[in-house]
Image (cartoon, rainbow, N blue to C red; front, side):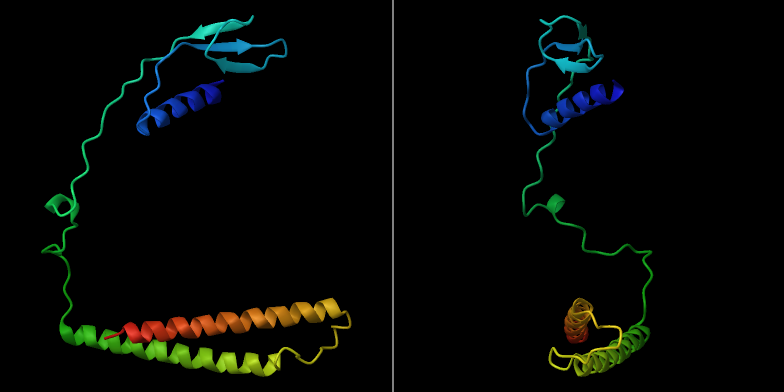
Length: 165
């Protein structure tokens, strides 16, 4: 019962928050012969009792700031106590990042070359445990997905490298 009542109250609150104002009316809790509870807006059937709910309060929100005003733009300055890094340290970090990305790119390109070699243009050699053609097809599909994933990784690494200063 609490769940139904809270669901009803939530629905009423959402409708008010959405800007749609429904007239507040009476709510009845009806219980049938099987003990099933149901909320209705009319109490004309047997076993219905009026539920007293607290009145809903509707408040309007303030108007959002117009574009171009100072309130709508986020603050661009950093706080005064924000830690600063000197240029030499930042350049060293950037160089380390570039080297890491280049190493990852090299490894991924090597992995892609090995995957394509094993894939053999869509006809890889069958393994001993693949007497069933379905197993062979599953392995070929998995290889194709691995190749696609590796190509996407290479593209992402190239994008990251191009974004570096």
